[in-house]
Image 1 (tube, rainbow, N blue to C red):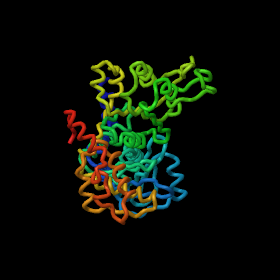
Image 2: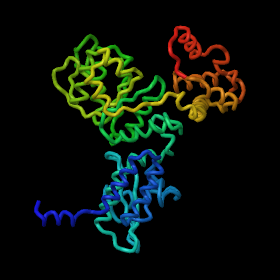
Image 3: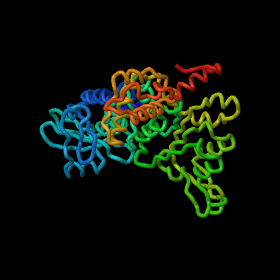
Image 4: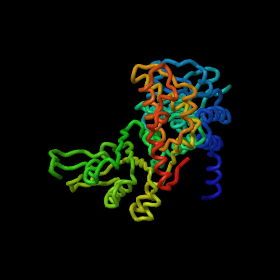
Length: 426
């Protein structure tokens, strides 16, 4: 490049890009989603976009989340606003002394929010619209988290991630960071920590959110059935195959598939799985035609995959492929401060499902906070539901719990492990 060309390139450099890079770093940082959005709204002023705000589209209304929109009541979606959002482009919403600009916030193909800002004391230019659109393109995943309160994230199936503990927030932050990518994610953690709910969270905060989310428990199926379940089969491929069947990978095309308990699949099947994860190619059982899919793969396990690799029970190449973005989920004993909120949530669901109005006695709430919970959230759920089913009064008391009646399976298991000299997690 000659001197004149270099000078021309310098002349076209947009200094606002440095601020937009700062905005991207803020959104990718470790702070809460709502606080990150507030900081972004303030940073926009550095590029001449003042009084900024962002809102989430919910139902037929705009719900303010951060900036100028935060304290505003829900705003009905007018036909003019719907038309503006349908265009999918940044533009002028109101022409006045300080014009108001708007840019749709998108997640994949869906418009999920609106970013607005004013240009003070001058006419809005193409550069202003371009900058606002660049920032709006970054906001989708963070806005999706902030709209749920930044600590309680509601999945479409009503399952929730409850808690404010540092251990949970660290796991949520990791999940939030990997969600917008297409990297395979490996969710690691003990049985019952909520790996399926985290997988749903990652899918819901990814560009694939409008496409299928398909779940498969690999440990629940023997290998021949697992292959048919994942890849499908042709008619006549085996006894009982009376018609062609699409597999789960085909059903998840364009979306996400969760392969739970991935550590339990056989070495023979691991090679077939590696091919579809790596190349996006497979054949139906009994078929000869190669099929291609575009699927984001999330796997989950409670097993020690490194030990299985060393023992040659798990392929190293598959292990490295799956571990592109590992996320460790904390055991419940690592986030005891979340137990009261989890217990209230579980009890509220029990009440709604059974037409009850039970409350948890303060002494009982203190008691359940001291347990080790080797079965984690699943065990807490079963424990509390069992006590709720047996209680006679309006409050669940200490005496209603299985551990106070000598019927606690976890306590028996713990005693058996101690007797056998096995390590006990505390």
